[in-house]
Length: 178
Image 1 (tube, one colour):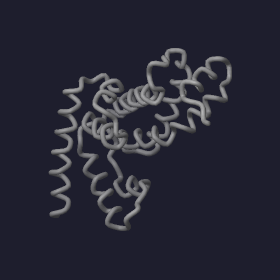
Image 2 (tube, helix red, strand yellow):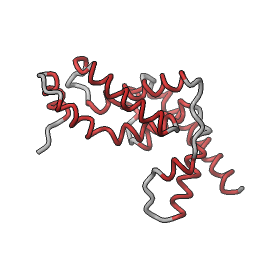
Image 3 (cartoon, helix red, strand yellow):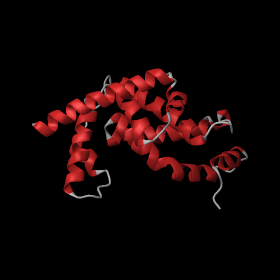
Image 4 (cartoon, rainbow, N blue to C red):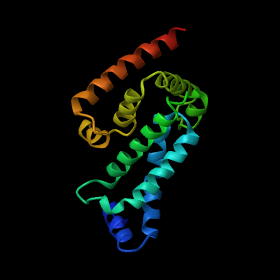
């Protein structure tokens, strides 16, 4: 039986820093996926994920058992992504082929091409919409969980997702008819 995130946090706080490595192993892939979607640059995403884990380790005493560790870590990660994006003064343009190549493709070339089209379309969303779409559909979070992570109200998040979906539909229709 694997220890829960809360158990591992307690172990780290009790003086066992090796327990944090288990938390990193458990959450790294998801964090990297989120950061890559939000920043559209794998190098920046790697840096931000590392920064988020360092920040989480330093502030582990602020973690409360009533929160899910994954949600708390994602909140830190999203804030780190926002900081990186503002330092870059804009989101980095996405290389759709490189991005799609990093995604798992099960159904052959058609699935790869659809993912590449989606990646191209995602780069045209404003950062807030890209963040909302990523958290809602890639991470499959509820609007309440998204609100907890982003600090944005549920109704605003629903509007962001609705507008992002409409924009993606338009863009994807343009790509398929071109």
